[in-house]
Length: 201
Ligand SMILES: Nc1nc2c(ncn2[C@@H]2O[C@H](COP(=O)(O)OP(=O)(O)OP(=O)(O)O)[C@@H](O)[C@H]2O)c(=O)[nH]1
Ligand SMILES: [Mg+2]
Image 1 (tube, rainbow, N blue to C red):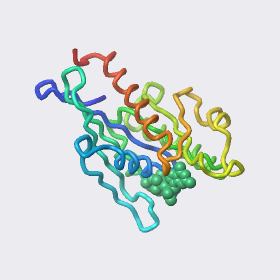
Image 2 (image 1 turned 180 degrees about the vertical axis):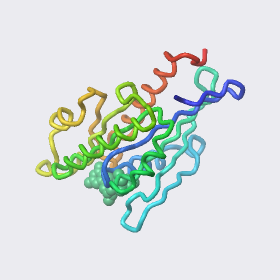
Image 3 (image 1 turned 120 degrees about the vertical axis):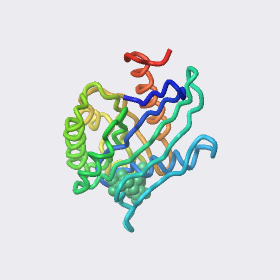
Image 4 (image 1 turned 180 degrees about the horizontal axis):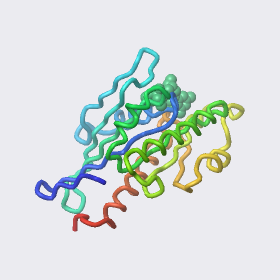
């Protein structure tokens, strides 16, 4: 659940970008970081290997300003997608309020997408999070690659999006779909806050 501090009138929500290695999670955060003005964001922290793979996690704090009398912050994290960083993924998912699942649209990455989705569900179960109730949006990234290399959005939706979550085509390098995904997951997280017990009034 989001952390609500009634005394300081602050709300902090944690959004985690998940998905297989190289799907574009760090690229999403980099685009957000590049586009937002200084006053709206803190310092992005990123730890990558030489091959650009995230080694630990990325972190980007955003300041949304005042909402319903509360100063509201979003913390964006991206997990390392490569399979052997399981322990880190589990750690980062602790206390998650919403997930952006960044799938790689390339046909040859389908198995990796499925495996990563299963890994996400397993890690949520470890934290006793009901995956069916957790806000999630699906992002089908790398839509700018040649049509012969990527799967149609409808096929990705049918295979990966069994929950019928909102889904967005994206090109994280060009920035397409990045803010659409972020806006959608933020709205879902805040809606849930609004309807849960103890919500700010
Ligand atoms: N063509 C294309 N390349 C992309 C896109 N998004 C990311 N990439 C490239 O894919 C590679 C991996 O992107 P990252 O953002 O580092 O992927 P990641 O999901 O953070 O990877 P891990 O940290 O290893 O899990 C980089 O070379 C990016 O430039 C996209 O939309 N289109
Ligand atoms: Mg990364």
